Image 1 (cartoon, rainbow over the protein chains, first blue to last red):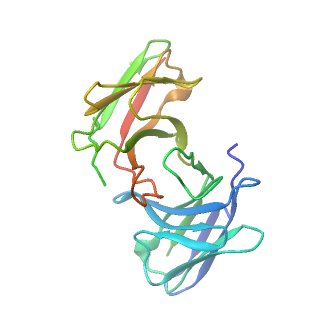
Image 2: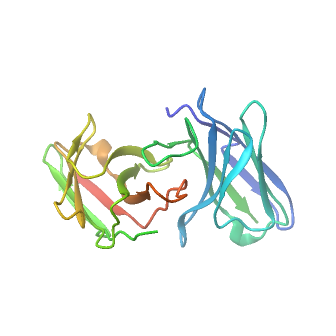
Length: 115
Length: 112
């Protein structure tokens, strides 16, 4: 158990809909990262938040947004969903801002299926 | 980001050592070498990391070539639980590489 909690574990929805994925980082960790894993693209970094502020951005679509709240949990919002958004979404956390020697701890993911 | 090259798959027998190679010929002097693994139906898990010297921890050893253009993750006695995809990743000390950039990794199969 990594200590990172993601909810829900599974989500089934329809095209055009909006969903929210939630992540609780390990106790004391200040950074939260979101990754998307699909069969054809592998693990893709989406975005990182550090202590409530956006720190780094990756291949995140404009239809997607994220935020980190004062209690350090994070939410990833996916809107106008398309079939291609079906994937496993992972959240990770790390103690600080993500320095070169810092370990990331990953949750077990949310499986999103868009029908 | 500097790129890494790993074999797509490898096979091992239980209780035997496994050597997982990674080539990173364009590595810079400030790149750290990180290894993560992903067990089936789970998120990635940190294994080990190093800069120049060989590193050991309870999970594995990391052997880094003298010219740093390649490295090898060593599992001393493979168990069935070690069957996973292993990712070799470079992280730059000097840049803003806060993210981990995962490649396709090596799928390790462990035979009983």
